[in-house]
Image (cartoon, rainbow, N blue to C red; front, top):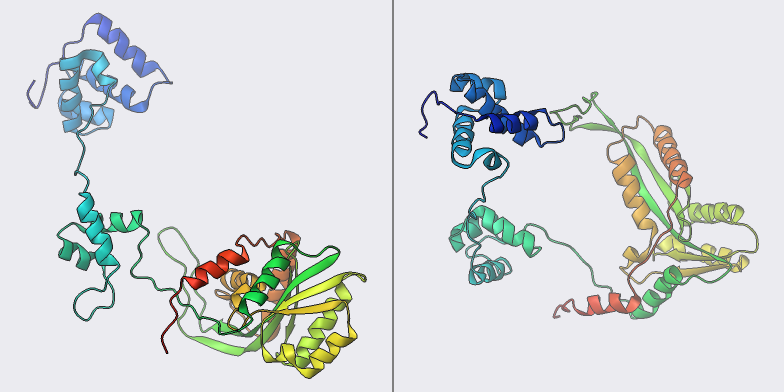
Length: 358
């Protein structure tokens, strides 16, 4: 059957009955109903353009299903042809070469590969490079930073803190304590536009500063609740005030294990004197350059992303009010902090990092 403008389709009575049953069956697939309708309209000697218009398809689609019916009957309309495979997969040698090239420095002055540069060098398509990178979890455009701790007691402190997370002492409270300083109250110079379909939300590049505040926070590792206070500064005086606030909120008789980083106010003589007057408290300091062990940092990260980064604050009071509302909302549905990596596993990963030569 050629691709003529108008094609004559002859349908026997039994085929017509099957086709009409397919069109009238709501449980049939939409594509099968559409194909049957094309054949029935063609059998009524309608022009191809009219069949295409009424069936909601293109004219080549009408010709295709007319030919299929002529060759295979009604059953052919209910089957999709097995398509030959597309581009054959790349040889293993090519994949291995792309992976090796990605992990090596590119020629010239570039510091890392781009997809197009590697595709040109390897003689394959950009999509092939991107597929290989995805399959092997390669991201040459990204770079993670790290800082090796020089604390001689690193392993000991690590095991101490991980032990508190994984197996906290009975009848005690484990608090991850820190402060987020220099939180800015930023206001935009003009109102932005809200998000809408087809357009991202907008705000001005320039802004007005209205001062800063510091959030002191203590994350209860066992239930995820956070005790927080906003203060103007972050000296040892403010830190002691925050410790007193925690002391008032924690029920008497509970032993308190506080995980802290090595910020100077945490070790101030007056803080140590306060600690001596409160024997139920024990401070556990993270290793030097090991603040990533402090669980409250995850809360600070979430607070920044969810509330502060896109917030508009016209005063310090407005900023502090927003932070306090976020704390209250967080504490309505807190989630316990779960540490999943053993201390030995952390040490093994760190040992795998090469030590720089001096």
